[in-house]
Length: 114
Image 1 (cartoon, rainbow, N blue to C red):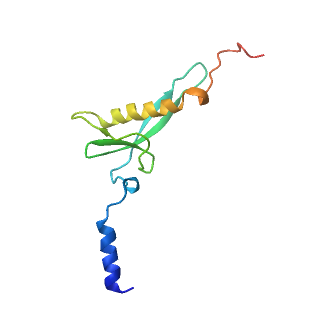
Image 2 (image 1 turned 90 degrees about the vertical axis):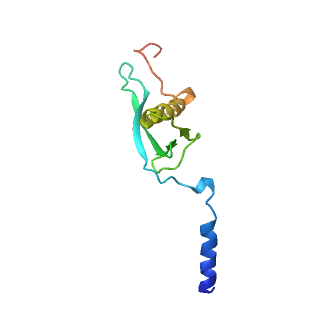
Image 3 (image 1 turned 30 degrees about the horizontal axis):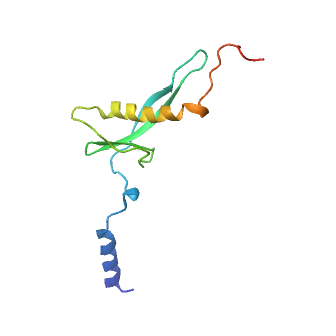
């Protein structure tokens, strides 16, 4: 392939936008911790990290590498705190994962143990 053809191919690739799934935010990934389980008796409780980015007024819950997780980006209202909103949105997603069949079981005393 000639140099001219390679340059033309490179220009064509640069002109095409990346698919939405392949785009990554260039915003700094931030981290906040949320409580997903309260302390109960001799159980210490549990906290977990929430990773998020804020870019152009959009808050996106991400993984630690900056790739968006489930859910749509949240549009921050004027004066709204991004950390508080990330804690609320991400915390709700995490708590959802800690409920139901796979939740940790809490035993009180020895009742029911034979």
